[in-house]
Image (cartoon, rainbow, N blue to C red; front, top):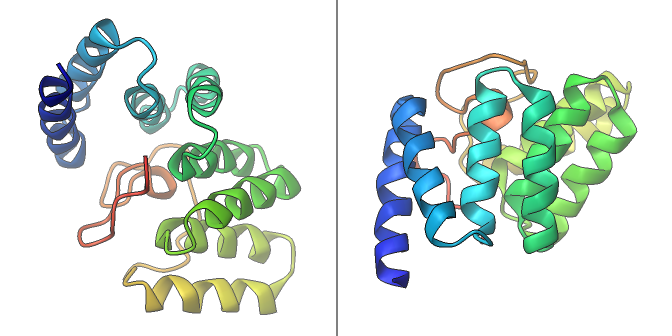
Length: 169
């Protein structure tokens, strides 16, 4: 069954990356039917809801993913994105820092941390984080996170940018 779930994850991730959120959602729900404790599918389902602008429905899924796997950097980053969207800079920074403690090479989290630092007026810290994101290969730097964006990195990188390594799951 593990190989089936891995195959389904790959298929869903491809639909997600192409912006076919309905098909990706369907597959992630199938994964969760087969494995209700699958933190990655839970997090990705939350990312779909966030991408669609339903942040209140996305938040419990990110928190559930973190209950299932507290070391999931992507879920910490996604939770940071929610705090960012609410202008809760301190909580956003705390979540991005946690994501980076778990995965120091997570370029999108460095970029989003830079955006939060910029909002806080911490420009030196913002520049430092942008440079880290750039060194890690993130090309579109410091685009402020927005609640509904469907291109490239999606909402704060709900979807990974091409060439960026996958967060550890």
